[in-house]
Amino acid sequence: MILAGGRGTRMGRVDKGLQPFRGATLAAHVLRRLAPQVHVVAINANRNQEAYAALGAPVLPDELTGFEGPLAGLQTGLRHCATDLLVTAPCDSPFLPPDLVQRLRDALVTQQADLALAVTMETDEAGVAHKQPHPVFSLVRKSALPRLDAYLAEGGRRMDGWHKSIKVAEVLFNDAAAFRNINTLAELQQEEQARDAAPTLQDVVSCLSGYDPHAVPVSQAQHIIREFVQPVRAVEKVALRAALGRVLAADLVSPISVPAHDNSAMDGFAFAGDQLDGEHPTTLQVIGAVYAGRPSDLRPQAGECVRIMTGGVMPPGCDTVLPQELAAGITDDHVTIAPRTVKTGDNRRFKGEDLMEGSPALKAGKIVRPADLGLIASLGIAEVPVRRKLRVAFFSTGDELRSIGEPLAPGCVYDSNRYTLHGMLTRLGVELVDMGIVKDDPASLEAALRDACESADAVITSGGVSVGAADYTKQIMATLGDVTFWTIGMRPGRPMAFGKIHSNGHSAFLFGLPGNPVAVMVTFYFFARHALLRMMGASASDDLLVQARSFGPIRKKPGRTEYQRGILTVNADGAREVRITGSQGSGILRSMAEANCMVVLPDHQGNVAAGDLVDVLLFEGLI
Ligand SMILES: Nc1nc2c(c(=O)[nH]1)N[C@H]1C(S)=C(S)[C@@H](COP(=O)(O)OP(=O)(O)OC[C@H]3O[C@@H](n4cnc5c(N)ncnc54)[C@H](O)[C@@H]3O)O[C@H]1N2
Ligand code: MOO
Ligand SMILES: [Mg+2]
Image (cartoon, rainbow, N blue to C red; front, side, top):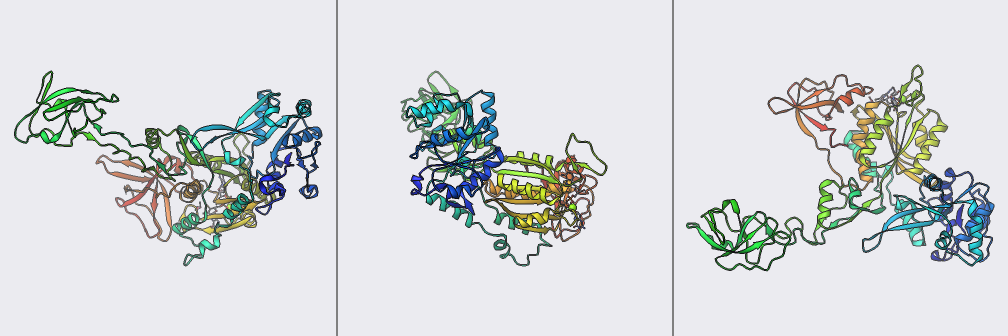
């Protein structure tokens, strides 16, 4: 049941659910997200009931009159509910999770609870994380109705008050943004404008001279994709360790200097360097010892020094450290330094030499790597703002495809593309929506594309983008949005669809990759990967090509980019050498599995002779 019975106080008393949003109303968006998850949807509304009924769902007004709040709506819902379980969602939450009901139900059943509700982790302004319950997103057993009736009869109106009288299971959802509700008209406008600001494909290609979709150079296709896709905006705070692989959503400014004081880089003796003599030994009196992490008030004067440990704070006046093994002589209370053993300033680490207070330690857009975790920890920061995870839906198309476990009928092949895509997407760190195999039939393709579009930020398909008689994918894609079909000047991976599709007020970027298994991987690595990284909010980075000598000759036609699968080794002389892995057919996945790199032969390049230098992109590090 969609809860639309409120007064809409924060929206100026308008009927929230009926506010226009992305080509429909807010309630219509909620309905579209909820309907596939349940048997039947009803709407709880106390005004404008006809307008709600037009959405095609029964409308139930509160039993209690006088806008008594969400519990009154729940009571009505449970009274009319023909199933054992009732789920509720508010009418102003158009982004609710597509697996809301499934996950609530799993928890309700396993914990034998009366009610399961969604919670997310959120961070307050002071940076402290807390659990945020979303009680209006809950799944309740019909059997809890008598207890709700009793609570309301006693005058109770609060969700949390009622929850005390029943068994509640909490379900943690990672995507806090999915529970976002639109409270004010200004927020509503913002959401709409953000969408309107996006360029069309026509906008992007009109800036290019000589653009021809039937002959697109690789660099041009990469450019168009980069200009067209947009990063997700939602941000969430995660605990430091959980930030690994995520994209920083804001610059991290160092709240402290690291190190916080000048300190010693060596175990030895600290003193003022101006006492050193280039000709004669210097003997200093040792007035005490300084240990790392233990403050001292020692202040050596002329002729004095302190024994100091690595990391120990340099006492005032000291700027030089003699490592103890370099001392010319050490007695109980004196150290002698031979001429020219150390210079002034040696072995001193400066305050802030790693990071200075107030300076950005890490930039927004950085993908957090192990060193960054350590760096952030060194600043004492426990939580990190990151972009929300990108959701990517993917499926394979083709009547000839069979899934593992099915018998292989004559003329059929097992679907391998979904597995390579699963691997690449998992390593990229996105949320996956694996939609299986879809037949080459227009109705199934349309349903799958719409479903994918409604549940993800990006959709990746494989197959059906060439010119075959059963390649309906293209026709359907074209009807669902702003999609272009390219013949790219490359091998493998010539045909590819790219654009943005829309369905029921949702939109998603679309990558229609060619069906051949090697072409899928190559187009993913050289087009989809960059685009998805940009959508994740990551700063652009170039592919790091290295040069290697080609072991043998390679045949290559100028005028297109060729990606040959190679094995890069270091030969006996220590030089990098690359060999091509046998047949380079774009259906031969073995050539990818054997390879550890791709030899990238650019457009202008002709045949390669044995011993020529070629560019190589290593798979390791690519994802
Ligand atoms: N007349 C022309 N024919 C073809 C052209 C062309 O320019 N003119 N381009 C060729 C190139 S290059 C490619 S790549 C393919 C692309 O074809 P589609 O994207 O339409 O893909 P399909 O026809 O559906 O499949 C191609 C091939 O790959 C196998 N396949 C597909 N999906 C999977 C999967 N998930 N797992 C394993 N194997 C898969 C499929 O069985 C076909 O053998 O078009 C050329 N033809
Ligand atoms: O994309 Mo195709 O051969 O170039 O596989
Ligand atoms: Mg085809």
